Image (cartoon, rainbow, N blue to C red; front, side):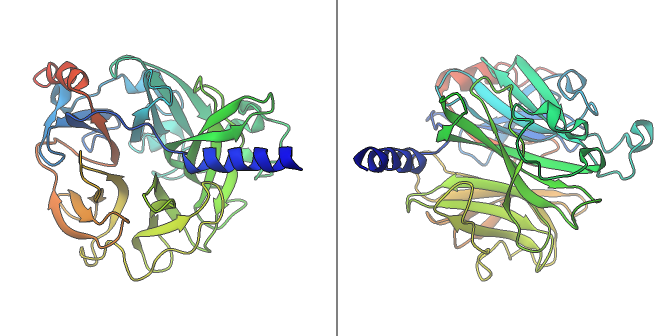
Length: 349
């Protein structure tokens, strides 16, 4: 009994510390899908609001080399590896400008995601997961599947990463990267729902998806952070119900996600449509900044608003400055060495 209790206490303690590694006090990297094309771009900043494009906002890697399904990278999410050695990225493998060429039913259909790893932020290795191929692409093909027929899947959208040191692999190895994203299989479900898989430390193996939650309507673009209150806070776009960017909380990463808070959300944009939220903290500040794309505008506006230390009380939205074609992406703090390395490429086209 004592051994069981000790094991449970250790697991609970590890789960409580589940968080992506935060490092750097010199500047910020905005890693994003370019609104000028189907590629991943960088911009750097010292203050979190005013940015400079790296390589003119052009691709920081060859999309066709790493997005092996459709040749397009969207919704880039970047973070540090849990051991502090290197960087990880996930992207939606999708090219909505190639619908006819690729034989897709819909411009917004896609079939998989890409997992990438780098030692220097500039040179990347990757693996692509085409979910149409079924359970054989996962490292646990014998596990119970969420779908009967994977060949009819039509969306695998906006993956993100969250390091979970409490995850235990079948061989006893502890620690995994929770990859969470939305999926839709038109033949078997009515709308986009949030799912999650686990990637191993090599960032090349992925478990079968599991349902994260289902609120009875479409949800996409989740962004999870661990806050000072000990709860996991999720920003998410509700496409059903009353649309908008909302928040929800849970004591656990993979379960217990309650209904979103209905009276405190990104509401100041009126009827303008917003998505792709990404929360980050300014260096030395306990409050939060929430970035998102206001995509119904022409031209589109990529906005950054303020939130309190509990990811509530959204206010004071402003446009991001200095970025050519900002779109759905993520933010990572940089060390001085990292910033200077990317700064050398600011004027490279």
